[in-house]
Amino acid sequence: MSRYDLVEDLRRCANQLEEELAVLQQQLTALPLLVGRVFSLPPVAKGEEHDPVTQISVTQHLGDEARQRALQHYCRLFIQHQSENISTKAAVRLPGALCFEADDHQHALLHQQVETINQLKATLEQIITVESGLPSEARFDFVHTHLRGLLTLNAYRAITLLDAPDSVRFGWANKHVIKNVTQQEVVGRLEKSLKAGRAQAPWTREQWAEKVQQELEAVRSLPKGARLKIKRPVKVQPIARIWDKEQQKQTQLACPSPLLVLCPNRQQVPTLGELLNYDAENITHRYKPQAQQLWLLIPRLHLYCDRPVSEVY
Image 1 (cartoon, rainbow, N blue to C red):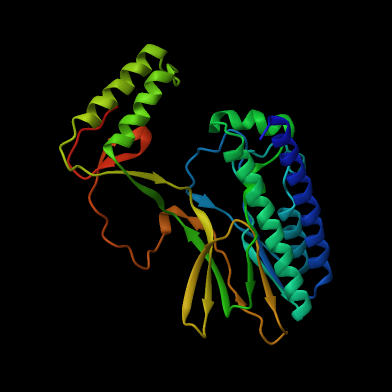
Image 2: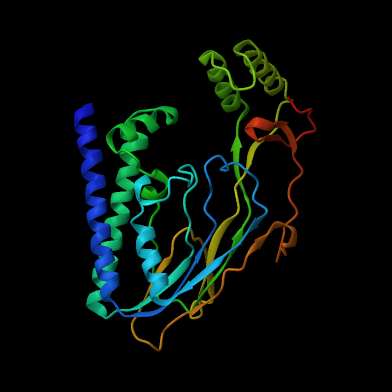
């Protein structure tokens, strides 16, 4: 595909996404709202994206106010849609749920509309991250040259639509992303970094090359059979726990945006729980399995080994 065609596809997809979100707004405005409960979180200011999060104060919004905030949230695709003081590197989150009464025809229309929107979101992400053929560090300029101010985190995020569960309760997840990697994969990544000839502050290019060389030697000298894992912490995020009484099944979902819930009548409205303030000092784990002992090898990569090793600083 030529670069011209790629840009045309990008713009067409983004424009269509805006149009379909506007249609969804109209549909949800017209439906009877049975119950709405969303929770606004403090915005992340520019320059504070990487600050540790130990406390989050939650503000609850109910009824029509919840619906209005949710509809605005779904359509927040560009920087122009939010305050200039809010970070564009941290997605704005609005956990919660909106429950609507919908007959069979409305039910089918809403499912089709949400499916169309989520497909456009997936297509947009595919164009930017795959079809562009650009490395991650070059995508920002590409996107903002052709779609100025696009908030990719918001644009990619799918909308979740549920059919009348028995309850929806909210909480916080504080976890790690864990990925098994081979010694060869890590060596390849470090060699690529070395050949790039770049530096990372506060090191000079020569100091950075020396540091990466030390990391390479540490990985290459690992004993045969040593297992490596990348264990990267993820900032705390709101979640929803969906309970289906008939199946006796609980499903846990990430909840950065309000869930949409369709109910056939007013007698089948799920119980909506509350999202409490987050306080890292007062976390109670229902069940915390014994983790495998790991030793930190390369801190900047969050790389761990299952054998005792010395950290490479």
